[in-house]
Image (cartoon, rainbow, N blue to C red):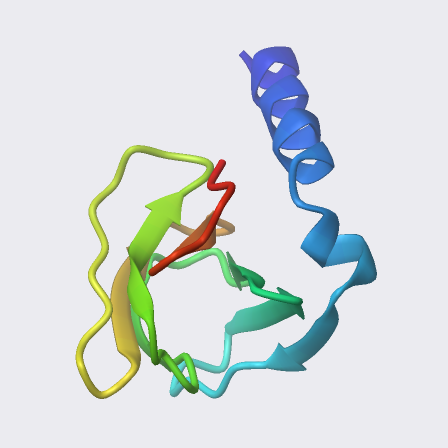
Length: 112
């Protein structure tokens, strides 16, 4: 239901202080309808990807420096994703869809 989804989204946002307090940057990607942001606080990183168009799309994002990354944990869904060695991520988004990821790092203490 919509209420359950919004409750889940609010709970997820509360567990991502990087979004409110982190240094952010827009990640480059080829699709004009997609905006991707990377938030960094100390050794913690969250990446948010939003499809602003009504059409389903497939996009490739350039995530920047991925040194020490073990992978990404999808915070909103249980969908697979894999960062390539060159620091790119390919993913599909439904129309008006979104994905949020927490970076898993080597030696990181807390991972949500």
